[in-house]
Length: 121
Length: 95
Picture (spheres, each protein chain N blue to C red):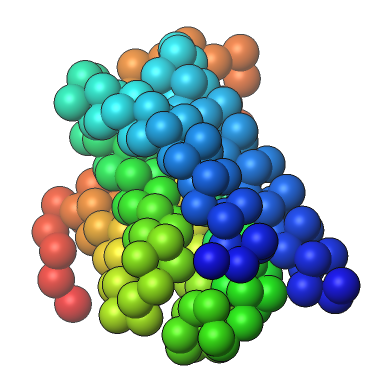
């Protein structure tokens, strides 16, 4: 019974992650410039990778060692990968956004840009 | 084949085509991207999703070796981010 509950939670998380990933990819294709695309990319990274990996960890935990050999190793690796992406994806996105703004690669017309004003001073 | 395994095998056949569709859209943005930052952003998302896809395949094919490369993929995307950011800020990748 507890297997069925854990499996249902895992499958729900996997489905939610798939929908998030589709939404994030469509946003990454359709949004106008880089700084707005960054928002969609973070949805695709956190909602589309961390959530389904936790779901897969729960699924592998619920399947049991006689159905899936080495299921504890697979579950642990999925959980560790989810934790790593949770730490690494916002850090990388922030570094990339800072560097892009610093190098002035992107052409855009913001209403106000306080970081640029601070750099001019 | 037990009940839960049967449900999972059928769910993968429904969910993974949606996932592969988003892969294709990420590749379109990576090819099209006007600046280098867009390309790196799309490659990042592609790597994280590839890690998830490898984990799904590892449960689907019942092999423990496939899942170990998912950790490396996640760290590789972070490395790409940091290198490109360093290159954009200081025009060199060094110490």
